[in-house]
Image (cartoon, rainbow, N blue to C red; front, side, top):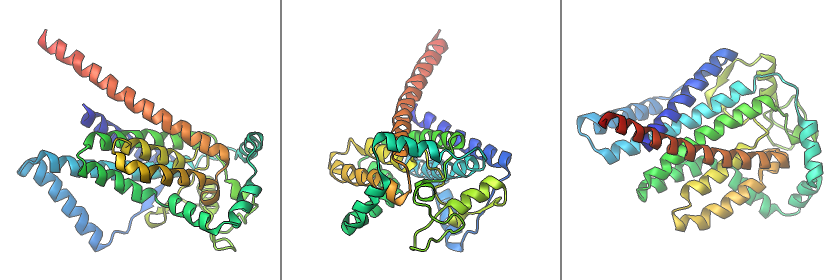
Length: 304
């Protein structure tokens, strides 16, 4: 049952991303190296071999889950690019106002971090650990044979990234670095050496950027913070593995704390990310429950 729902979620986000890209007129430029082509061919061969030629259920499940995880991650990024083309007015004024109402002062936050270089390094390390943590979810699930947690994570990730794209489409924002810090809007590489995705975002919104270089993919959505949502999903997915809790909880709390610095997010973006993660976990539980009920009803009908 769980395998069926995982396949449905994977195919659904792939079809949704393809449709969204087609509707907004976006395409991706993919320049694969010879090594990448060899690895992809090897993966396809092993998946077919262990699924049909010499069936090995465990090996086939591992390879299938790996492919599904790669698909939902890439399709989620594609959805975020498609969502970013919608030229609705930026909502930075409202998001910043909510931050002030919450009592979050970005200037004080940044000033505090400037006095603590070690903390900045820790926050940056945690914030940039998303890809490594995705690999950790896969490896830890395989080593402990908790394939159910891996499949649940894949479904929840697909739901969360789709929700993030949909919300970001309706509530677009430049980001706090542009609106509050007044960083240059025309530069990708900032004078202090930092990076700004704003020129890419503007190119998508005004239609001048229609072909995306696959090698330069980046996050584009400010509200809600998908880094925050993903951090919660990491902890949820691997929570049953007790030894990893001591690593994942502090690492992902640092990740979340670093989103205003490393992702130029508003504080309210974090709240939005928490809501998306909780909603994705609840939706995943509902999908599994609904699927089990549907399967039970089909079995009853078949026997009658």
